[in-house]
Amino acid sequence: MELANIEELLEKYLDAETTVAEEKELKTYFSGDNVAPHLQEYQAMFGYFSTNKNERFTKTIQLKSQKVNWKWLSVAASVVLLVSVYTGYQDNQQKKAEKIYAKTQMAFGMLAANLNKGNEAILQLQHFEDTKNKIFKQPKK
Image (tube, rainbow, N blue to C red):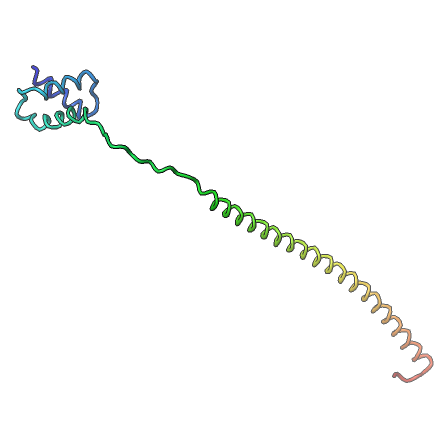
């Protein structure tokens, strides 16, 4: 009966479903001398667990302190600041150029409208001149 119980506990142990008390029972069984021949392979595993449980690491571990290199961080921040200022300056210059272009377009439009009015007046004067020349029978120049 005990062998069937051990085999059942071993199955539960391999499926990670055992309690601490059941694991202790398995450890005591496998640390003993009368282990069933077909379970001998697990005796080494449980023996390894019990011997390594008492091992301690005695060497000192040197941990490297991670100091942040503030010089490089400040240089990186300066570069980012300069790039952002330059980009903002370029954007500002481009916006100014676009405003100046729009104002120039508006001024040229007004100039063209006034020149067209002058052309209409010149056409009327030309029509008047042609009519006058017909009436007074003067040759065209």
